[in-house]
Image 1 (cartoon, rainbow, N blue to C red):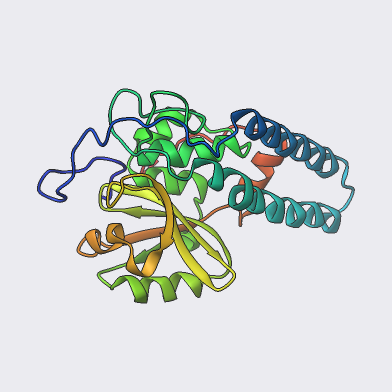
Image 2: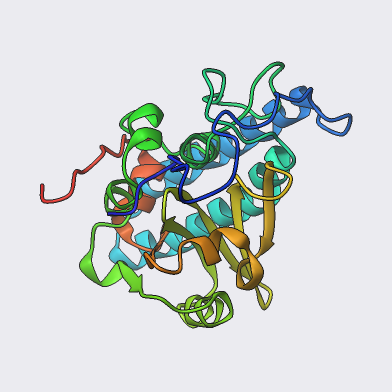
Length: 249
C-alpha cells in the first residue's frame, strides 16, 4: 500500500527531519491571504445558498458546474501560490494550517489536507487525513471505483500523458511514501507538493521529470480526481464534513 509522508531511509537519501524551518518569504502577505480565503468562503456560502434554492435538476447542475470551476480556480490561483517555497519537513512543527507561519515547515500529507481546508472543504479532521495512507485519503475524496486510476511502472513522461488524457482538473496522486496534487491545466501537467527532494520546499514542477515520480515508479501510482463527482462538490457547497474512509470499509 502507498503511504503518505513517511520517507524510508533505504528509499531516499534525505534527512528525515527536513531542513530548518524558514522564515516567511518577503513576498508572502498573511493578511492578504486571509482576506482572499474570506472571499473564497463567501463565494462558497453564496453558491451553497443557490444550490439549496435550485428547483430543478438542471438548475442544481448549473450551480455545481460553476462551483467546480470556482473551487479549482481558487486552489490554482489563490491557495497553491501562497504555499510555494515553504520548507518541507516531518518534525513536530510540520502540521500548520496556514503557509509560512514562523518556525513551521510542512509535511506532504499536511500540505494536502491544509490546502483542502484552506479552500473551504471540511475534512473529518485534517490530522487524520494527513496521517492516513494516501489511498485512504483518495478514496474518501473520490470513492467511486471508476475514479481510482492505478498506473503501474511507467516513466514520468508516460504518466503525464496518461493523466492528461483524464482531462483538465486537479487530481490527488498517491506515491511511494508521498502524496500531492496533479494540476492539469493549459496543456501542462504539474505535480504540486511539499517535496522531500531538491530544495525540499513546496513546489509546482513538471510531473514528467519530477524526482518523486521516478522514486515511486517501482511501486506505481494512484490518481483520483478532485470535485468531479456530485458528492464532494455538494459537501463543499453545504459546508459538510468529509469523513476519512478506511480501505475495506
